[in-house]
Length: 339
Ligand SMILES: Cc1cc2ncn([C@H]3O[C@H](COP(=O)(O)O)[C@@H](O)[C@H]3O)c2cc1C
Ligand SMILES: O=C(O)c1cccnc1
Image (cartoon, rainbow, N blue to C red; front, side, top):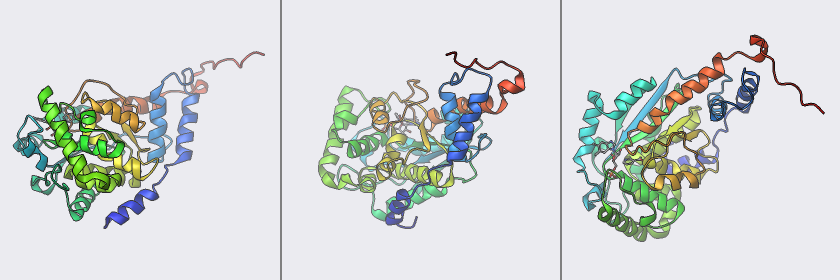
């Protein structure tokens, strides 16, 4: 992917996953000692993992958590209660093991990697002009893509970047229409007045960029951010490598919305791990036809919601792999329907 044109071309020909493995996994589920379908969404999740891993019995030996960190020029507009310096301070906290994601990733049996974008030098203020130049967008997409280990069995995606819920809301508005008020939320804890100001800043951005936001990659360049572009690149690379993806909250989901617009099934290899308490996340998930696994009132980011869903997938795989079939266990299957 050495040009935006190459990124577009790549999106036009995404791999579809392995039908045979998905079908074999579903067939195996039907023969296990349980009423058919009784493990509900655990069964569907196994078939999804099987499709993208290309394995009838998916495994979760190598689970990665990638957190991309970047700063935003729009932070200067007072759209977050926290100062931009917190981004770097939290990156240091990740390295020291003191953040929420350090704990949740450990519990999930996942390896955490934090990637900082451009030494945390901020983007330009998206309310006054494009956040990034074309080469900056491309560099961030590539950094994200290159951060994905192709050997992973599952990738959890997340971010850290003060003011990035403003960028995410603007990108959601660019993707699905609507105004700042439709997509702006409290982020790290704005009061009502703060949310109104944030919505007004987003409206300024939407007015300034106008029709140019109609193109998904141009929208990502103009109102996205470096860590959002990196998550986009990582999600795309995961698709190419056959690595299934768990998306985190509002910011992570917004960052991959352009992929859904560049290709009709662009997010088929991804699942929404949770629905964030950031108000517009539920709307965004609906618009993308993503059904979250968890709804836990979390609104942190850092891939925390994505990593929290990993144990669910582990349980799904353990049942799939370890359960006996009716024949193996000598359990009577249901009677054929009587006429
Ligand atoms: C201490 C702290 C730790 C965080 N970890 C994730 N975020 C989250 O909050 C930020 C987005 O919210 P806003 O748009 O309101 O600034 C992002 O950095 C996100 O990852 C944090 C925020 C703070 C303050
Ligand atoms: O849902 C998210 O991604 C989110 C919400 C608030 C703050 N940071 C991230």
